[in-house]
Image (cartoon, rainbow, N blue to C red; front, side, top):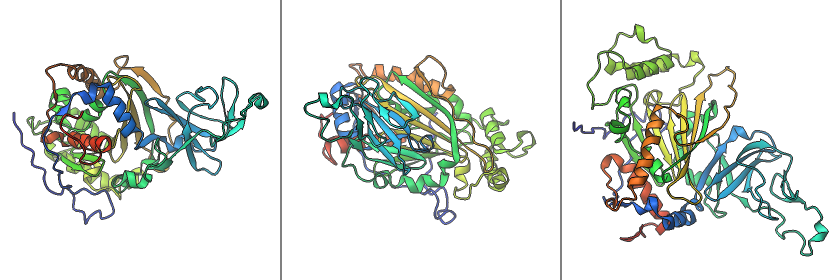
Length: 443
């Protein structure tokens, strides 16, 4: 069944929410239609180039600000071969530095979070302050050369935005605000700081990190991998917007795909949307095709009494998935009452593996007590379920990765519904080769 897309106009009147999330369609960039080489996903040489020219030059998501509220609170996060400490200082600023002892290279802390007065290496008790400065070297007089001349672990750029902390491995990186633009204007109206942790999972997947990014950058695969979602969302009439580094699509929820017949009864997934909004589906007398707009009206009218402020969000944002990709590796499914955030991290040595971080947050109504933070779960692909939809992706992506090694597969054959994937690789090209610097035959 061939279904044509017809979303090519502004979805929301900008006059109604002049300071809210921009909802109008951005002009599509001209990116050509060349194959994206399979070697980008399988080559160790390209993996190394990517590390040198992408990962060490961008801003990266490090963690959640409310995990480091007090002085001495820290997050230890890993990206590729590097491990980084992000630490709340006595003046409540944040600093980041490499997670390594300058003596013999031991890691000061395992990946995770905690609180310390200082960082003392377990190996020989070299001790560092919250800012990474050396505080004590046992038996210093036994080192004729003295201590390391710099007197501290090298620091890294670090900042906060959107209730999250960010860092860069590039000491000369551009300011965080400039790098993220225009994401602040788009995402600040959601007020992620009003959302509490609901779930945190790290899964090792048997695929390249870009294969995972690709999977969450298009809805073309819904009909194949997620057929049940066709009674939950419109996977055809989506709006795709590409910006400088980042991109998004806007996908209608609480409706059905044009690929399937309109049901006479409320589909279970849409039923759940109504219940979550506070509606009683048993009393609903409208048509299934009207549910999306009726849910929006109900949330607009009843949000204040539920302790939920939707005043900065447009009507479509009350139901739909505004899905953003912050380059290079953060996907955000932004909703009025929750945030699904996925962080895709490269394996330190193997281009055929990656780490997939699942961070779930839920709005806490005003006046209600915040729930206890969930404990981190960590496992390998296939060891346990991560939810039906993500299980379907997790099952499929290792097969994609294996297929990319086939002699018959030259690269990705990208269509218009996958414009975000092509834009993603264009930004990679800009970092790897310089703007406009890619030549035919380059990986």
